Image (spheres, rainbow, N blue to C red):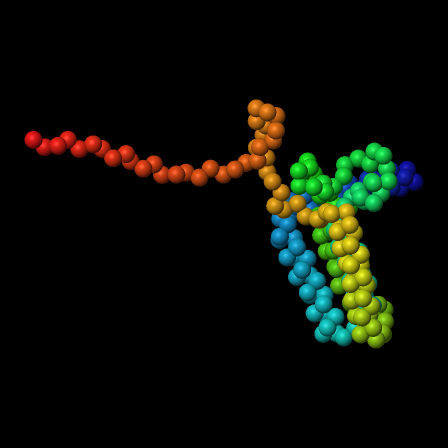
Length: 213
């Protein structure tokens, strides 16, 4: 009796330690692949192509594909949307950091509502789940797939049109490439932009010739 009581906490601790170990290893794997942005997205693209190829060859699971497309569209819109909505920040007196709207304003990087790594992670995980669903006939609901395609194209166009109007209205771009890089302060306290120096080859001065006698 006492041995059974003592064995239960040991078994519980073993399961807890095993789960913690797996979670730590998984988190370390995610941390290791974080800098490899291009490689991560190439892998996500290949996984998506494999899923679409399976759906095309099996001629089924259109509901799963439609749901996956809608979910990816929502993730993409969150990726393009700033973390602090300009429409809300304009209504507040002290709305915190705002997006720069002029060229001479202080540079502030674009902070997304959905960061790039979480965007990739959600896309990869959802595509993998949808790929697993194609192995179960329960998710293969018969449906007229051209209607789903038209629904998705219409929803995509309307959503992107709304997002582009929002970007034009509040004058922001969801990318920070091409921003000026600054080197420091000059004597007047203004920030100077870094300008690459161009080396100009020196031209030798002509030497005076001594006339021969």
